[in-house]
Every structure is written in C-alpha cells, then in structure tokens.
Amino acid sequence: MRTAAILLPALLVALSPVAAAAAEPSPELTYRPEVDLPIVVVGGAAWVASELAKKGLAPAPCRWCAANALDTSVRDALVWRGNPNTAHDLSNVAVVAVAPAAALGLTALAAWYDGRSENIAADLMIVAEATVVAMNLNQVTKYIVGRERPYSHFDNPDVLRAGVGLSGPLPNDDNLSFFSGHATATFALAAASGTVASMRGYRAAPWVWANGMAIAALSGYLRIAGDRHYFSDVLTGAVFGSAAGALIPALFHGPRRGVAGPDTHGFRISLAPARGGIGAGVAGTF
Image 1 (cartoon, rainbow, N blue to C red):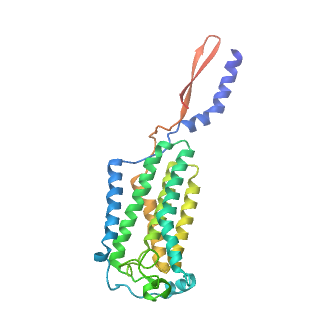
Image 2: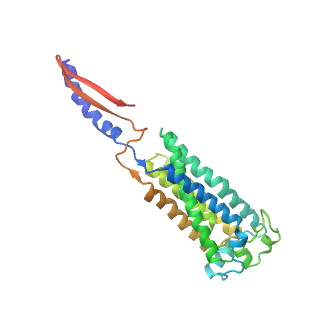
C-alpha cells in the first residue's frame, strides 16, 4: 500500500490535464424547434409561392438595363460559346442537389464522427434556416431591382434558340439578374454548415468549409458561363449568402458555454484515507 500511496500522486498529476479537458462541457447551440422549424417551413413556402407568382411579380421592362465594362469583359471571357445552356443545367444540379447534399450531409457526418449524433437534427435545422432566410431576402431584392439578364441584354442566340423550358430561359425571368439566387443559396449553405461545424467544435469542420465553398464557387462560375448572371450578380450573391450563412447561426444560435449536452464525457477522481495508504475512486460518464 505504501507503493500505492507513492504512485497515486504521480498518476493524478499525469491524468489531471486529461480529466480537465474531458470534464469541460462541450458547446451547446441555442436552438428552439418551436421557433426555428416554423421559420424554415414558412420561409420555404414563401419562396416557392414567389416563384409560382413570378408572372405577376417580376418586372416586365428592365429597371436596370445597362451592363458595365467589368461585367461585360468577364462575361465575354467566361460564357460558354455554343452551349451556355449546359452550364445553366449544371448550375441547377449544383444548387438543387449537390450543394444541399454536401452541406447537410457533411455536417451530419461531422457530428457522427465525433460521437455527437444527437446534434444532427438541430444542426441541419440551423443550416436550413439560414439558407431559407437568405433566399427570401434575395428574392425580394431581385423583384425590386429588376436587372436585365446578360443573355437578354446581348440577345444571346445560344440561349434563346433553346426556347422556354428546362434548358432555355424560364418564363418571366429576363429581368431578375441581380443578385444571383444560385450563388446566394450555395454560399449560404456552405457558410452556415461551416459555421455550425466550427461552433460545435467538430474535428471535420475545415472539410465542411472547404467542400461547401468549392461547390459554391463552381456554381457561381456556371451562372456566368450559362449567361444567366453577370460577375457582379454572382459576387454580390456570394458575399450576401456567406454573410447570412455565418451571421444567422452566430447571432441567433451561438454556443451556450458551460451547458453540458448529453454527449458530454468526463470523469473525476476522488481520494480518501484507507488503512495503510490511500484509496482512489473514479466516477463519471465514459
């Protein structure tokens, strides 16, 4: 027992940093499903309704018709000659399928990888909320500004010959260029998922950021290549989407430090005198 009495202090010194780190509560985000879920549902429904009502909401004549020198030069350099509608179709796949699947899927995977699967529902709801809010604000701006799209301004025959449909121009869409909804959505998804992963402290957070931003940048490029947006449309959408994606989670769902969630693991060691030496006990969750 004397040997145990000598070794125990050394063991406690070695374990103390590990114990302190393990006992520190993990950050819990502010999340109220009774508030956040209605925002996502109502906001999503409002956006869909605004799309269906585009005929009555979109300006018939353009309110912003001119193209500046920078936008024109970037368009001339990046637009796909002969097949801009292919770039347009790819950008739709990116915003409808690839970007949401990557942002939501990697956020969920990051939580699972750290053994915190109980966070997934809240994480995904926060990401969806930030994206829906950004998209609705973008939609209102597009209807107010009424900027003419580049294919309409330059009468691009490669776009117009496809007619109205999935690959050709959408009905009543000629004057809704500013600012890019695709860029807003993809950058909001990227920034929101990255911000949530960072605030949670997930080890895979850098991968969430890198993957989301790469997809968003590709989507923005495809909007210019498809002659649907100018460079300034995409840049504004990228800045606005990133700001909304980062600020909404940070301002309204910030970590509540010191509140331990159900995934918190920790332990403590207690000492007590014992006959001929010292007794040690370990308690906690593992």
